[in-house]
Amino acid sequence: METNPNIKIAVLGAGHLGSIHTRLWKTAANAELIGIYEPNQAQAQKVADENGVRAFDKVADAIEHADAVTISAPTSVHYELAVQAITAGKHCFIEKPITATYIEAQALIALAREKNVLVQVGHVERFNPGLAALHGYHIAPLFIEAHRLAQFKPRATDVSVVLDLMIHDIDIALSLVQSPVVSIDAHGVAVLTETPDIANARIKFANGCVANLTASRISAQPMRKMRLFQKDAYLSVDFAKGSVEVYRILDEGEETSAAVPAMMLGSIDAGSVKKSIVYEQPISPAVNAIAEEQKAFISAILGHAPIAVSAVDAAEALRIAEAIANAIEQSRV
Image (cartoon, rainbow, N blue to C red; front, top):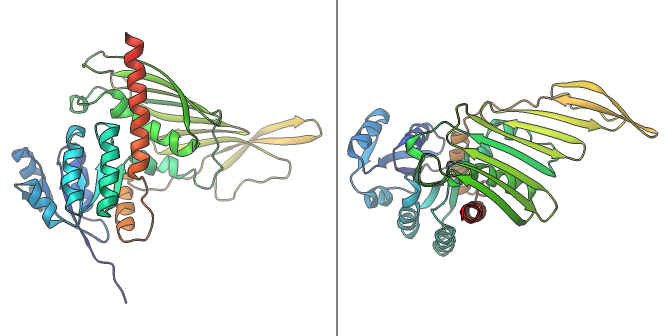
């Protein structure tokens, strides 16, 4: 029987996210964690000891010994590290945002195509159990409302709140709407750092959908919610809880799925047609979103599935994020 080869993985950057990736790679199927690279030697030794893996002294050595790398270093060095790995012919999983600028992202895409390597980007909310629970539903939003609010954490201040937090919802909106962006109106305020710490963007798509996105990293109470409004349905995703609620209209005689807990809330008379209002709570899969990202990455390398979140997807999210940041800057002049 043919068996899948183990893909040798090195983690570049062992801070908060890198430590999580390191731990999860240890138990990932068809993967072999060979070690980490972290310029902070104390942190490198700590994470290496906790996971029983090698701490490489040089990033080039980590890349050389691996088949693929996870880049979980600060955004400012994503491009530099990815260029080294891709030039060496290594597949890359890069934490979001893909790079610090859209120009860098475009250059990486071209290099990856030249070297024939795969690049997946860590837009982890694509794998959130709440969003996954909506698979099987027809999603065609006409209005999106998202709030991503977090308490202040100094480790995330190398980029604005748009690139730090809002980019998650930008990526999700782009993946759900599947229509070109035609206009952006945005405002933001720098409160504790030199870049905006709270921002709001109104994005209009060619198909008429509008997304109103708010992100803050100076909130007293955290929140990660997105509400989708479309013809005959309202869907609410709580990314923090990994849950979803659906209110939708059923035509007369249409039934709910036996696999989805549902409650009839009433009926609407629309002329000669009677429609029902139903409340549903789709069951969210019990998964770890980062582990699911890693599984998808390995599956793509082995040729079992396409890249889940491609560099092209991530570059487009970054392009829109940059447009939002520019709009905020113009609004402050």
